[in-house]
Length: 210
Image (cartoon, rainbow, N blue to C red; front, side, top):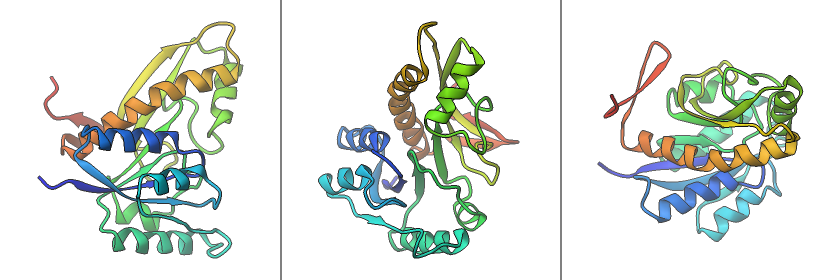
């Protein structure tokens, strides 16, 4: 089986991208990160890509103010690099149907909560953890899921929960969840690259598990 070509879309610091780069270098995923794209020019994720000698590009929303036109431009880059899998790693932009339909069940997102709780429009970054804190929830966690046209509503691949200390603030929750995001995303990408994921009726089955 040939190694799949992976594109990572990121808007920020790219710590999840770095986890994937490290996993690739350690031979933990049967895939190659071939492209990194950001909608933000100064996103440190682009610098991480440069340091790892990975092709990277900033696509400005000013150049493509219409979301569909933006995703058409994005799609042309993905096709040029023959991308098999798209990973959203802190990508703070909603994908249009143009891109989602072109890569149906080939786009993975990591979300910093236990979906379907604390997901959907407006739930990103620290906003998620503020909502968790305000709710008084006793557990939180991270979810890796396939991307569909419904925000944070795609089939769930993996989840991991962590207990929340009663004296934690939103920033403490954020830091704790981030630590489990990295290995969870790597595991999900590895499963995809090994062709072990099957979707039936909005449920993901992992081949080789009982």
